[in-house]
Length: 277
Image 1 (cartoon, helix red, strand yellow):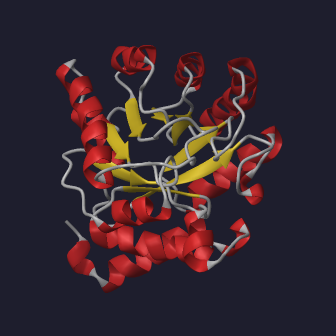
Image 2: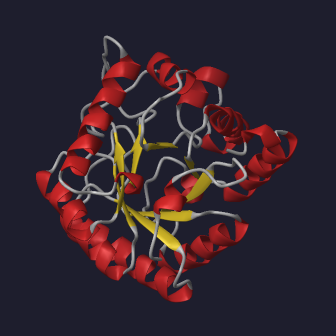
């Protein structure tokens, strides 16, 4: 696809765009989202059919306390899936959920359109890759590393600190020649944040010039907020955040359940036509 910029901002009818989560891992926090190679292709095609704009393919769990996966194993999980999805749908939009440069590079070569880096381009080589390829990029905020990020996260002003950090990185990319319309920012709900931090990030509207992506789907905040310990019982809470996100002007929602989110957002767009534009 020649111009990806429209697909990093809200739909013309005011709906958030949807990014479907495709976890080619045995240990992602939501067990129902784990797929192997064969089922990944079927699941990706299903999510596109249900209304996903993006399919986000990941081969390493970054849940709290997760153990790192070496790049060769991560690559073996994700590259065949990306190649198969690209062959099945030449115009479908695919992102690679990885913090490793060699995996991201191979994924772009295999047909991915976006790098979704949970480490927020901490590795200068990842930044260089984004600039070299001119690809779409999602920059996520994470305090610490997956293995320790939930051990007493601390901020003086979480909203200001998170968005200052993200915007500074995005601005640096733009100063080096990257197209601003190909950048989206993810505040990293649940990545080095307490429930209070998460709610502050979700309550405060961002005035960032860049697109905003929220990844809240079935996360542990719903155990704390609603008492829903099992991930399969967190869809209602997730949909509540999605409705709020549409009212707040969020551009992209990264979700496990594309069909229910598509129905929710379509209904809201019909009932609230003023959200268009």
